[in-house]
Image (cartoon, rainbow, N blue to C red; front, side, top):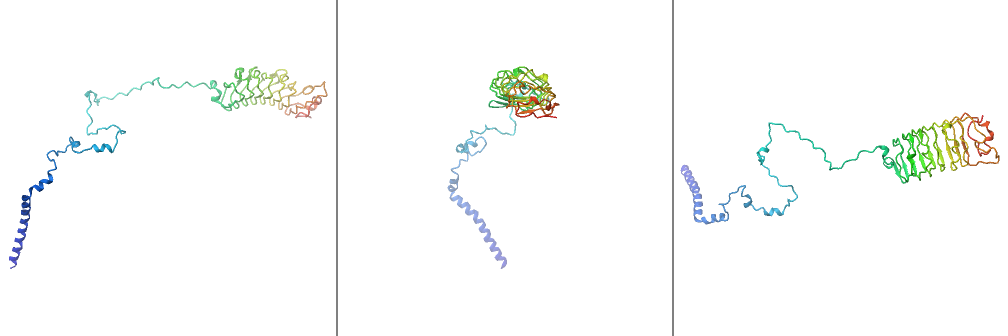
Length: 329
């Protein structure tokens, strides 16, 4: 019985399996137009997609509206092989060494820098600091006084290496009032270096190597030539008599042998300390013939540091409001 049952079940299963493809074939045979309708809109005869007709099949016109490639670099084709040169002779010869390109000489069309100008010929406002009518040349490593603007009123050229003063250094500077050449190497000056300056009031020359003083203009108010090497022979006879506006005469730390008399009545301060002065005349400061004279302006006289005994010349001070500073015994 069991054997018959198994045989029956197997026959039923085989019948069902054969029935399915039969039904599918019957369905296709009965409705062939339904399957053809799915493909009738496709042109399969021209559906040969290659790189040659890729643009004809796919419409890329709409993509031009999305991106603007005008600002980008030109299109470069990239391939697996280098492009063949137009001229076969242009191919490099790998068996020979390429020549080193020769440098071309610079063209003269470009800007040419001017040659450097020597320091002594540069305008002072390139070497120094010019503020209004004042010129500041301190510590500028100068060996000569530079050309100055014609409107210069005050010149400061301290702590340089200027060795001489020439008359041409100040030609035409009619407004120059002060010259300060402190701490230079000045050993001599032209006789007319300062005399032709009509407005000069202050001449400052300490810490130099002067052995003589040039002629001074009558407008001078202050002369400072301390710490030089000036002997009495380096001063012109009666060098200060006609300087009616001179108020400050400072010649300390030099090599003077006597007081440079006569001195103008305008003088207020006389500094002669640390020289070699040993004597003086009765008329050095006062008029010995006029005992009523009172010289009120001259209040500051320094003779300390000289080998002179001031007590030996009591008649030389009667017109002064104050005794000189120095050795009295």
